[in-house]
Image (cartoon, rainbow, N blue to C red):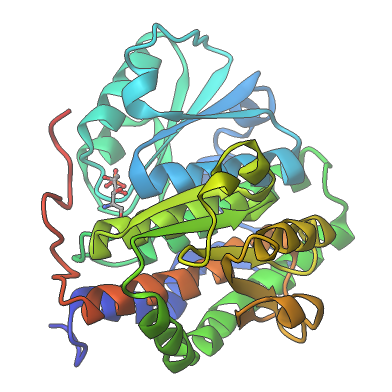
Amino acid sequence: EKGGYENFMLKEIHEQPKAITDTFRGRLLAEENMIKMSSIEDNLDRFLNANRIIIVACGTSWHAGLVAEYLFEDLARIPVEVEYASEFRYRNPIITDKDVVIAISQSGETADTLAAIKLAKSKGAFVYGVCNVVGSSIARETDSGAYTHAGPEIGVASTKAFTTQITVLTLIALKLGKANKSLSDEVFKNYLDKMQMIPKQVEQLLKIDEHVKSIAAVYKDSKNCLYLGRGFNFPVALEGALKLKEISYIHAEGYPAAEMKHGPIALIDENMPIFVIATNKGHYEKVVSNIQEIKARAGKIIAVVTEGDTQVRDIADHVIEIPDTEEALTPLLTTIPFQLLSYHIAVMLGRNVDQPRNLAKSVTVE
Ligand code: M6R
């Protein structure tokens, strides 16, 4: 059942090209220049007339929600707030029938997310679910929704669920952006073409596994790690840190790169590895200067860059290249090396990667 892989996590990491393709199926119709999602079409007015979209989720799904905030605002110009379901539900939040709430959950059983949905519904909001498990409680409780078609995710550390959540949310953002004319036909078409290339690009990235493993070997005994990104890749930094924490038990933090100088930079010395996402389109020059600040303090830099990059390569201790794509789509690629890196570090430390200590796959209690 592990399909020849040592554990479910590795299998699920490698299943991502297929999982993303399955999530596209019947929806991403590049030749017809359209995205077909009846759950959006049937509720188009609710989305387009929404005061704002509120996204509720926990853990990795919350990180997918943060990526969606950048996607919806950039591609569809709809204001978005992203909330931890556990905070939202107890905050006496202001919700009206003009709000659209999107709940994201792999399992569809997370207690806090379910409770947040019930609260939003009771205030008259339209609630849309993005779930992986078909027929799950959240899928049933929401007014409408779209499934990610990741297939069963057994490893406690979420991998393919995350990338397929981002896939669905990108499709929705593009569809809404086209519908409200935030995106021209030409720009929309270009996104569809670039989206279609993602599964192949993920496949290509999975081939650099040995290179990532060699980096893992260098940093596996670190006590602390930092992950930095900006824009669309800020949530990827958070997710990279979470993945390392949960399966290797190494302390890690994710930050927006520019926040460094507001505190975390004090932590940097020669024992601190810093994983930085520095793709060529997303605030590249600014990230480069963040990297220089870190190097000046003897921190070790492992940079995720776009293929062919030379500027960061010159100053970083290690680089990991991702294929070129639109900035908005980079999270689907930059996530992959961080999954592999956490995986290898955890294995080298002898951890149980599929069932890390103290964690459950579905958190059905608050
Ligand atoms: O099933 P859900 O997506 O609602 O789960 C939310 C979190 O419990 C989950 O993402 C958790 O953070 C994972 N262990 C992350 O790998």
